[in-house]
Image (cartoon, rainbow, N blue to C red; front, top):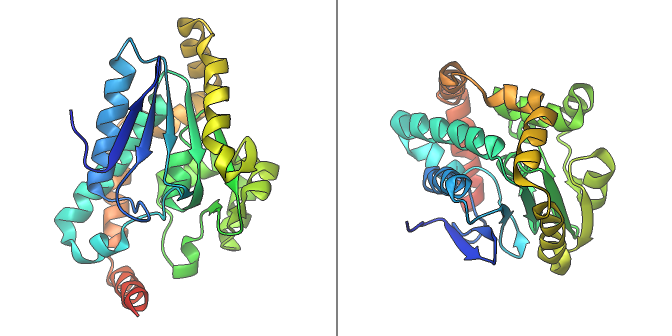
Length: 255
């Protein structure tokens, strides 16, 4: 199967999945569908024992493709949010070792993709940040995003960070528990591979079942019927106020 927004590098018994959807890897429907398809396929592939999700050097993902959301209309929005929810469901349910190599800028939606992993290694640098800063644009953080963020930070700390529109550099993200390692950006992928290999020696059924048991509350976020959550976020982003905000964002971006 070929993919338009990701690139795969097959190693001896694991795969590196690199986001490859343009200069800043903005998250659109095509990228989400590719991620969903590849994680499903790799989970079924018995020759693949683990996965690393990475981005471009100095840029993991800039977050949602606001331009497409602003101009795509209601049908695009419905497809986008359905695909995003289903992709998160698949990535969080992924049963094998899953490490995320955060090679740079990773706010908002980029943060949520990273938080699906079992372990995160983040590159150091003043522009290498993660966190949820949607209130800076007076935009809603969808329920599934909020739940995943609060699972990792704790509800009280997550809400404080959201109110402050706080983005964390790699050392700060390590301190609050959003990532597990903070290293020079050129070492991110190397460290990710070293850690993944340490998990690959574990008997797979033991890893798979322990992962399921230790992440019960995270799994609850994505288990079951997601249709109401999808409908709620589509309705919110269809609100004229939010449409105006997205259009203003795009106008400012072009300037």
